[in-house]
Length: 277
Image (cartoon, rainbow, N blue to C red):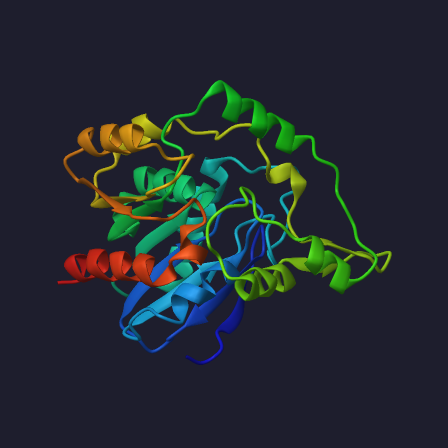
C-alpha cells in the first residue's frame, strides 16, 4: 500500500482529509471518533481491497482540520460538513458509502437521515445507541478536562492513552496513532491536536429515533466486548428499521478499527459490494 494523499477542502471550517487508492471506482468515506483523526483508518486501509477509494476526513476540531469558532460540534454540524465533503469528492460520481466509528458513527447517522439523496449507504461502528447515568456523567466530566501539554514529543507519545484503554491493540499501532495525534503548541510544548470543546457533555443525538427514520441501507457494527454499544440496544436498533442490518465482530472492544482492522474491512467490503451492484 502506498502512503495516502493529503488534501484540504477550503471553506468554513477548512477540512483536511486523506485519500487512498484514488483511481478506484467505488468510494468509501471514513469518519473517526472523538479526539481521534483520519490516521486511525490507516490500519484498515492497509488491508482493504484496492478497488475501494478511501477518503478519511479529519472532522472539524480534530487532526489538521480547522476548529469551529464560535463553538459548533453537534452531530448536525458534523453532518453538514459531511454533506459538503461528499459534494466535493463526488460531485458527478456515484454516491459513496459513508462509514463512521463511535462519534463518527453518530455523525454518519445524522448525515444519512438529513441527506439520504447524497449517500449510497451508511455504516455506524460501535456507537452508543442508548446511554446510562454513569456514561452521561463521564461525558460531562470529559467536557471539563484541562488541556495537558508535554515538554517533548517522546514524553507526549509515552503518555498517550486510548479511551477506553482496552483490547489487544499492538503497541506499535498505538505509538503510530500517538505520533499522528500530537501537535506543537505556540510555546513549543506538545499536546493532542483536537479541540476540547468538541466534548459536548453528551451525544447530542436521539440515536434510536434517528436510526428509525433513516431511509437508506444502514449497517450497525458492534464490537463483541463493547461496553458502549450493548447487544440488547444494538438488536433493538436493528429491529426498528427494515433497512438496517447488524453485524457483531467477536472478541473485539470499542476501538475495533485498530484492534481488528481486517475484520472491519471485510464487513465494509461486503456491505459496499451489495450497494455497488
